[in-house]
Length: 153
Image 1 (cartoon, helix red, strand yellow):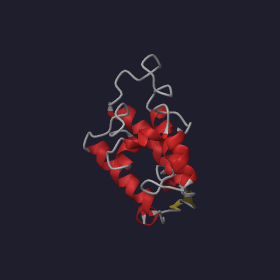
Image 2 (cartoon, helix red, strand yellow):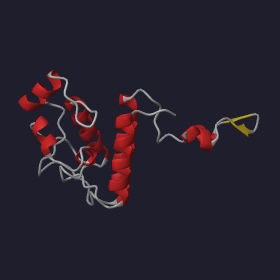
Image 3 (cartoon, helix red, strand yellow):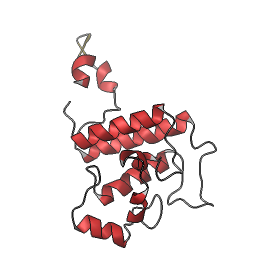
């Protein structure tokens, strides 16, 4: 399956962050977007609230100018972060009194967040969800329809 450069780079960064314990939904430089944007937290100025889809003045300016950050528009960045936080169990936008998971950096919580992010990233690039491996188990006349090597290529 052919993927865009932005998707490929985002997946590599998220994969590495997850496996190197560098993914933290409560840290703007280590959350899903923070990792996609090379562990900088300057993206947080694109919105008034962490996990909000509402662009700030700065965010609207960048969006209207057609700016992209590692291939993603400001609005896409906010979508990615909101999906990540909510799939991790947070109520968005983040606030000290809103619901949050008991252990926000547990592997299960982070995997749920990453699965939702990968699904969104694929949707943004108009490709099938890479996390959906159910196609690998499809059969026709008792034979697999897809093979792992061709599915991942």
